[in-house]
Image 1 (cartoon, rainbow, N blue to C red):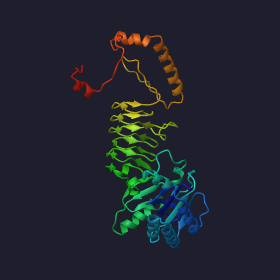
Image 2 (image 1 turned 30 degrees about the vertical axis):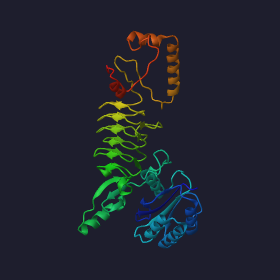
Image 3 (image 1 turned 180 degrees about the vertical axis):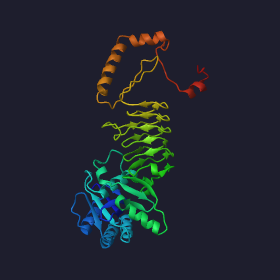
Image 4 (image 1 turned 180 degrees about the horizontal axis):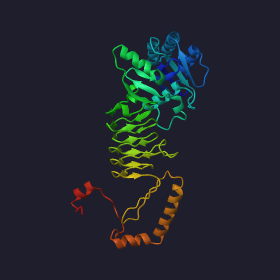
Length: 358
């Protein structure tokens, strides 16, 4: 079974080089019948290819897909045959390193459409395949061709607005996932994974190959490679250190039900239900001391974390075996040695039983 398929409408510069590609209906793991139709119509012989197609080929592809019962892809191919923009059919047999701009755009579409999650696709070397472009009110323009296009617009009585100069476009020009709110769409790049129920406020930012699992309030920065768990919130001005900004090979992630306060940040992975107070930036080289407490934190993602935890658990078991922990609990008043059995009850049971909650 092949890896991915997409019919794309794109933009080329004056030299015929691809600048960007829009895939309305990208498909991950397409069925064999679809690939066989593409082989017959486009002379596709396997491997990873981005095939520039003619209107006649698209009409033939539409007919073949209709006979196969692929009605949505058939309709798309038929509409693409009437396109005034160049059309490309991208077929990826395997998830190997991309070799063309249309291949990169197909993978980014798969992530933003939630068909693939961050870190599931091979995105090595994509920066070299994404041209730095002027993203304008008239679409993507090669920077070398921009001055002439600006002059042409002025001569025709128009103003060509340059919204950004970047390798990545904003996601919402290509994909708008279901059930999300994005206050400033320019701050979410194509290739971001925005889970259903997520709200991205005006100062929030989500990079490519990063995103949220679900219901989250994002007012800070989610860097490349970072995944935010269900129900976790990022406060205003906070940041997460991604693989492009010093995270190295360690995947920085945030568990469920976490809060990173305003102007805070992390350079380490967090588990579930963690809180990083406002203004505090925690990296792997920081020691955290809690006054009056013997508690400390260890990230399970550190290379030697398991060895450290094994040693700690061995020590704790030894203390428990010789009765030291029991003795400390009795002396502190937490543990009553005369009670043979302890049962934990929740607050509702406590109030309903008539037992004083204190």
